[in-house]
Amino acid sequence: MNASRYWRMARSDPGWFAQRLREEAEVRTVAAQRRIRRETDDAVRVAVARSGLAKVVASGPSAEVSYFAVLDGCTLNLHARLPEAVDGPAELVFARAGQRLRAPVDPVVAGELTATVPLGEATGGVRLGRGGWRIGLQVHTAAGERAFTLLGGARVLGAWDGPTTLTPPCPLSGMRFVPETSTTGMCLLRVSDPEPSAEIVGLDLTFARIAVDFELVGASATAQAAVRFQARGKAGGSASAHSVAATPVERPGARGPGFRVTAPLGQMASGGGGRERLWHLFAEPSGERPLRLGRRLHDVRDPRRTLRVAQRMLAVSPDALLRVRPYYTGSGDLVLACAPVPTSAPAASPEVSS
Image (spheres, rainbow, N blue to C red):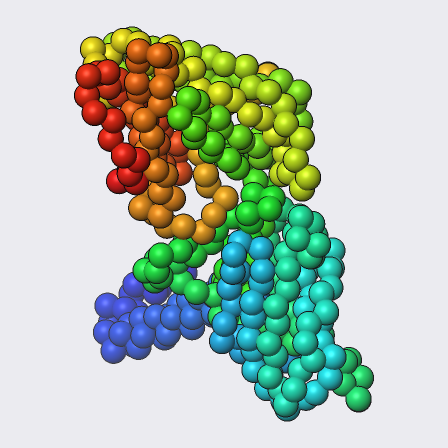
């Protein structure tokens, strides 16, 4: 029907015109609904493919995990209840990018699984590389092997208010093993390499010297290192700094190259107008960026309150005394608070710094 005839019929028969409009509207509505359903189905297929939900469905039965955490930074603890009361030897399966690693655990009894697995090469456990690892379960029953997907169980970050941190680093290697839950609810272990740091392993305070032992963790092996004792100064002003060569020290089971440095107390006692000055320590490995000396490979939430060090009165020279108050900051950095003491003042007994 051409346009002129269409409009003549519309003017002569308004009822026919209204009916025609309704029919055309219904046709457009049906077409729009089909297009929306098609686009929605496509979007769902893309989302499922990206999230890995199809893998969860295809991986077979799943087990609900009630506890999933890494204690002391290197020990995986897991408890799960299987949907069936199966019994038999079991293994945890760690999968990532086509790679699968297995760790034997206690046998499953009446559908209950309790697993404790050491992580990392330093502990002699599962050698997990950097990245996200999905965790599954393999049970060897009398009827054959059964595979289960482990769902849920990771503790929510920020919900813990105890004296320790939720995800401490491994104290032996500095690596981090963080339990997570993937977007599809699967148990996931996020592994990251150790951050470069200068970890203090010994602090020796006598009545005449201060010696600091430390290891370079997560840094390339180096035979030389120095330590810079940097006084805290005002913004925009100059502050005293003294660099001392560190002596290499061999230690069994060390996490990295070990060194010992003795604080230059004579230089630290001079200047400052008799007031207490705060000295920060920086390790300067050859060819690498400076690193703050401190203690970070622990699970303590507040190092300043927990890692307490006794203050000392040291004899810098026959006629000069220096009161040294070492402490760790909230981030684990070591600070030496030093104040010269007049020789006429009575020597105070050692006490614990706050």
